[in-house]
Image (cartoon, rainbow, N blue to C red; front, side, top):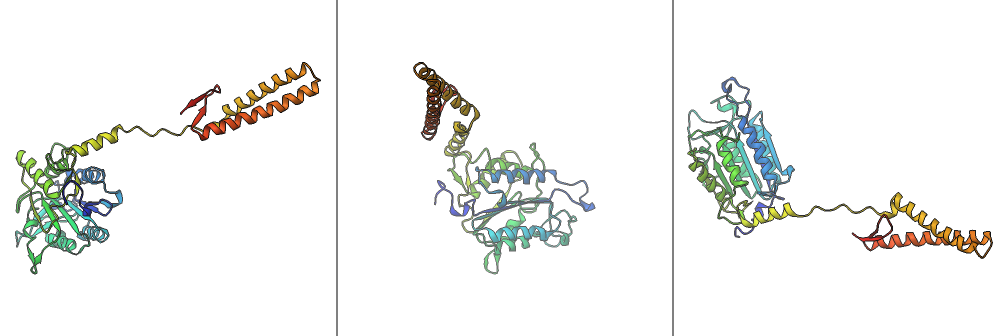
Length: 346
């Protein structure tokens, strides 16, 4: 498998995304510390993952969980998606994070009912880790945009002698025990702003038509470093980081495909069947009447009025039948009679 094609586990028809964001907090300990950028993060990232570039997820496969009220709400959404997922499960979390007061390596993710530094009111990272371990998805990507997110990469080590989350790539907005930046000129948080830029319109220059999450993470790291922002950390188990999943916006083939889609002519609506339009019917009747009157006038010159009437009626009916039969034939062959009776090619 090369990055010239998408890995089977990246098939958007088999994959799911769960985007969790805690932007508002009810507890007084977080008064004045809501995170409006988190709402923008989830909306922007969700919209992007549903576009053909980079991923093309169906809306039903891209779930947004905004301002969850409990840890169970977060875990239930992830477990439900993981049960259905047969490709890549992409899990994103943004909000306040904090470390345990007794163990600085333990990470807690907050929901809207959490209180600052109160472990019992937040989601302990190890429970999220366990949910990913036991889900059925063969490929898992976890992205954490919160303070101290790098602690998640510390707890990915040995678990009863086995890898903590086999087949999972973790991308954290910061290093262990480091705060994250919540501001950017775009209204997104600093880390997610750069991540969205790499997944979206900027892509990964020099890479193939499809890129892995490792390539996306490396490019995001470069952009954050160039801007003097906190640097992300990442950790992979198995091949999760190296599987090409996302279309690369920066690749010439992707750009050419997008340009082709923009320049494709719009489908023209089918021309109305002239046999069913009033102008066409009226023209047919007038044409037949004219032929009938002309024939009656010719016959009248040498025969009685009765014979002239008979000849006019018969000739008019034959002309009418011929007119509509010709119209039916023209319709079947793709031609259309014009309003004046001449034929045009559609």
